[in-house]
Image (tube, protein in one colour):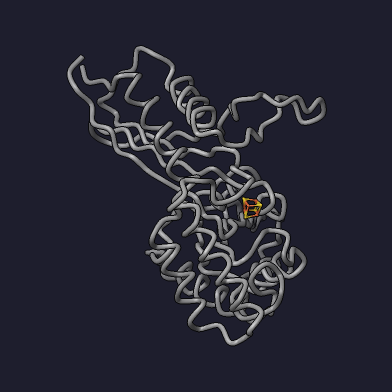
Length: 284
Ligand code: SF4
């Protein structure tokens, strides 16, 4: 029987929290640098410069990239040969708890949406599970900012609305949001599935590598067209106009009902914090 020690899960999650909230991944920094070089607007360029300087200061002085240190979202892939004699969600949440407390990170979670009492340790995380062949446990983790999450949207389109309907909805959502989701953005778009699955797809989309492209041709073409059109909206960095509204667009699709065309948009701000770890099962 293969397993992974609970303490290893806890420590890995804690370390991912403490690192991802402080160090912006190089692939995102490279995109920001490229946008800075390409941007024509003086004001947009200066905003991008501040964002780039901000991540440098965060990394070198070991302080959070943003005061909003997010609500933790995890996509967990569990190898089918693994066995756990403990509650995996509990272990992940213990890692979150330790990461936010030991990292002196802002605690941004309330226990009930109406009572609004802070849980004081940033738990619980939102955790999605999937099963994969083999002996590995992969944890993909993102401390997700509230500002960009609030500007995300979902709509049940009619199949007759088609591709144009999707594009119009994405563009309207981003135009209406303006500076509030803290652009430049990574735009996750889910299409298909049903009401709850399409939101899952949009969230999963923002976990992709910033410079990859969909392996589904239809989705890949949509990603390219949306990125081009979003960057012509003139929203710009932090909503102050310019050609850099989005750094990337990711589309994830799924089969759906003949009567439906669900679309969801999950916005990721420029503080695009994300980490992943692979743990390997050992004999118990
Ligand atoms: S949306 Fe992102 S950049 Fe804006 S305040 Fe929240 S975490 Fe920070």
